[in-house]
Image (cartoon, rainbow, N blue to C red):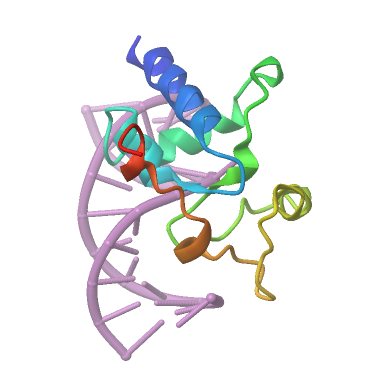
Length: 105
DNA sequence: GCCTTGACATTCG
DNA sequence: CCGAATGCCAAGG
């Protein structure tokens, strides 16, 4: 079942997101080894078990918009030091997870 | 097997 | 940035 493998990697990556940064579904899907599976990332996170403590609030879509139907996410992001704009979107240009420097710095 | 839906991504206006 | 349209992939009916 690649599904479990995929979700497992997704969880690992989401947990690897540094505090104060956010990652997009497409990014996570790509890092998981399954590009264009962005939707599956969302489903994996939605079915994400609580004991893994998945910081799904750091996961936003390509437009920097938060998870629809989840108002608490904004509160969580604010707690992480990520202040949303008045529109309710995150500044990807500032808070986007720069995984390009992982291991380089 | 076909159609619809979804915590999406990307491009255009 | 927001909304609409198109594309992509998987699960459910």
